[in-house]
Each structure stands twice: as C-alpha cells, then as structure tokens.
Image (cartoon, rainbow, N blue to C red; front, side, top):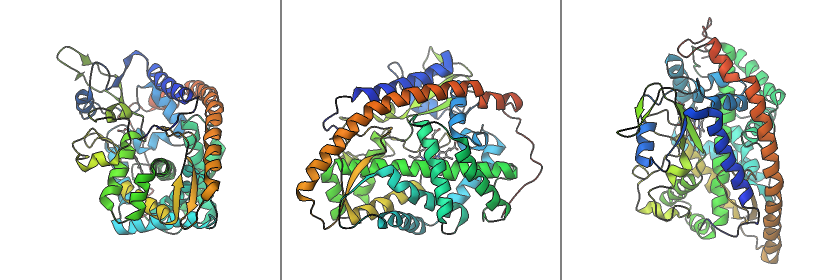
Amino acid sequence: MSGGRKPDTWWLPRGVVALRVRIFEKVNGDRAVTLPNAAYGPEVFERVYAHPAANGRSAGAGLSDLFWYWLSPGPEVHQEHLEPGPRYEDVAQATRRILAGGSADLAAAAGRAVAGVLDALPADRISLVRLRDLVMPAWAEFCYGLVFREPCPPHARKLIIAHAEDVISALKCTGLRHTRRRARLTAYVRERLAAGDVPHRLPASLSPEEQVLYLQGTFFNTAVVQLSEATAHLLLALARHPRVQRRLADDPGDDRYLTHVLDETMRLYPLFGIAHRITTDEIPLDDRTTLPVGSVVCFSYPDYHATGYERPDVFDPDRWASLSAGDAHHIPFGVAANRPCPAWRLSPLVLRAAVREVLRRFRLDSSVSHTRSIPHRAPCLLIPRGLEPGARLAPLRGFLRVRDGVEDVTRGVRQLVLGTVMVLHARRQRPAARYFERFPPGRCPVVHSTGDSA
Ligand code: HEM
C-alpha cells in the first residue's frame, strides 16, 4: 500500500502542488489546456502528444520564461527547450553519442559510483540520511565519467553537486536560484573544453560557449537531477514497503521483479509532473473542438498514469506481472513519437545497479510521506546488513515521522514565498520571450566556429 499514516498537515504540500499546477496554467493564459481532463481522456492525451503539430517547445508559452529562469545558464541550448529543426537534431545526436555505451560497462560504472558514497557510511550503526543527498554525489561522478571518460576529481564533483542541487531546489521552490554558484561550474567546463579534455564530437551548430552550456545543462543538471530523484523515489518506495524490499534483497538477480518495482515507482511517482508543447498547427480534440495554433498543451503524467489501472493509488509492483509497460498507460520517459528522453535505455539500467548496491549493504526503513515531488529529499534510515536494530528502531522511526510533519508545514510556507518571488523575478526577466524577440523560431544564431573538440 502507498498509504501509511498521514501527518496532520498532509493537505499543505498537496495544496502547494495543486497551486503550482494552477500557476503553470495561469502563467500560460487562456491558451493553456491540461490533458487528460474531465472532457478528454487518455486516448486524446496520447493522440495529441504524438501529433506532429504538438512540436513547439519554448516559443510562445509564458511557462517557458519560468523554466528558462530555473534552468539557466544556457536554457536556449538545452535539448529539452530547443525548437525543432537542424540545431535540435544536431544537439540530440550529440546527446545520444555521449550516452552510448555497453550495458555492462554502464551498470558497472553506476554500481562503483554508488559503492563509493556508501563506503563513507558506518557499517556498525544506523544512519539517518536524505536519500537524494546521499546519491547525488554518485550520479555527479557517473555523469562526469560520461562526459570526460575519466574518474571524477573531488573538486569537480563538488561543483556539479552545487549546481544540480541549486537547480532542483529552485525548481521545487525550496530554495532560490544562485547564479554565481552555477557560474563556477560553467567556468570549470569552459576551461576543460578549451583544453581539449572532452573526448566527444559536440554539436557543430553551437558556438564553443554554447557547447559548454549544453554539457552543463544536459549532463550536469538534467542527468544528475533526474537520476538522483529517481533513485530517491525507488529507495523510499522500498523503505516504505518492507515486503517488496525483502523480496528484492533475497533474490538480487531477479531482474524481472526489479523492473516491475521500477515501473511501478515511475508510474506512481513520474519525474515529470507536466510536460508541455506549443501547437504549431490546428489539432482536433474531437469532431467539434479543435486546438488552435499557439495553444499550450500541458500533458499531466500523474493523471495519465492513474488511468486504466485497478486501484491506481496503490503501490503494487505485482500488477506488472500481467501488464506490459508498452500497452499500459505508462510513459515515464515520454512518448516515442515526440521527443522522448534520450536516456530511456540507460536510466533503468543504471538505476537497477544502484538499487542492488544499496540493498546488498543496507536494509531501508522510513516512516515519512512519499509524494511525487519529494521536497523532503526522502529521509530514510539505513540499517547495515547483519546489524540487529532491536529497540532502537521505533524511536528513530517516530522521530522521522514527527520531523517530517513539522518540516512539511515550514517547507510549504517557504515554497509558496520563494515560488512567488521566483515567478515574479522570471516574469520581469522574461529570458525566453527576450531570446525569441532576437531569434524568432527558425532563425538560430549564426555560429562562426565549429568548436569541435573531438
Ligand atoms: C529515471 C530517469 C529519467 C526520467 C524518468 C526521465 C524522464 C524524461 C521525460 C518524461 C522526458 C520527456 C518530456 C517531454 O515530453 O517533454 C525527458 C526528456 C529528456 N531527458 Fe530525461 N529522464 C531521465 C533521465 C535523464 C538522463 C539521465 C538524461 C541525460 C542526458 C536525460 C535527458 C533528457 C533530455 C535531454 C530530454 C529532452 C529530450 C528532447 O526534447 O529531445 N534524462 N526525460
């Protein structure tokens, strides 16, 4: 079950999430529609998402200013935000090249990186950790390895964590944006690229400075953040469902069951709450209604993932024994027809390796709430295998639950205040709108040097 005892303030974080969705819709004005909704169900969601005219990415949506603000520096060259066209294709190909690798090698690299952070934990007592903070250094190291193809030095790891942490805190409105912190990583990547240390062919349609921002945004922000969040969700789900955890720990080679656990976790806690597109042609919703050009369509993953399942709110990995992820309403990595995640193959592979490494050494236990946005960064107790916690466990679980309830309240208020500050700041700065005033879609900035480093 995903339920558990709810703290008295359970409504507050939910209120914050609901408000956030409403703010997103409001920021886009009247031209915004969220699918699926009461009138248009999952079939319309699928059809519109895969429609060739649902291909505008950033230009023309008020929401883009907010995302560009959060993801800076370099949102204009982030693959996720590039308009369709040759520049996008060039960047997407580079991402595929950097993410390529043998399954065994990728899994081994992920296992090593996670082992590294677990080595620092005591083997003779219980550790209280926040899972996202625990694993982020491992994914920083792993992603550094993808880009530079060498072990990650500690100072680079620090810079990457500071950057990724800053982006994710701002996105969740638990902290403000710190541009100087992010600029330190930009300076580091710039220096390494200039020295010829990046052994990949980078997008020729980007200037050298844009290539720096592309690497920083895609690999040291998106990749690190998404892998950290996904690992935190997976481990927290296991900590809250001891029977599922025991089954995995008893048979670590059971790849099929681990895949079911991963599918169920990503179904219930998809990393994307909403993905949006701007329509570049009319799209019919039904026989009578058509989405006009320039509509902002918000695709709600949690709503789509809740349709077509029995008891959709329940965490039940066994449901996948008789379901195929391809047939079910399940798109953790987006839809194949419309810019899916380039790491759809790599991510499950390395996440499985990470979970195995953790379960081999620790039993997980947590009494905190589990929501899609996990703003608490997944507090959890790690009990070394072989250690009998005895009477120590109950008070620790009690402490976690009480602290979680108290933090929910203070964090909820903080998110509202910081969120409002950033929405207003982004509206004043208008980073996306200003960019498209200079470079309307289809008219990319001209690049004079290929800047290839390999
Ligand atoms: C479990 C981990 C991950 C999940 C669940 C995930 C999920 C997603 C989803 C749902 C989308 C599509 C959103 C849309 O339709 O707009 C997406 C896009 C993207 N993801 Fe991931 N992602 C993960 C890890 C990664 C990693 C490791 C990278 C590393 C490079 C990455 C890079 C990207 C990029 C660049 C896009 C934009 C694709 C495009 O527009 O062409 N993601 N991701």
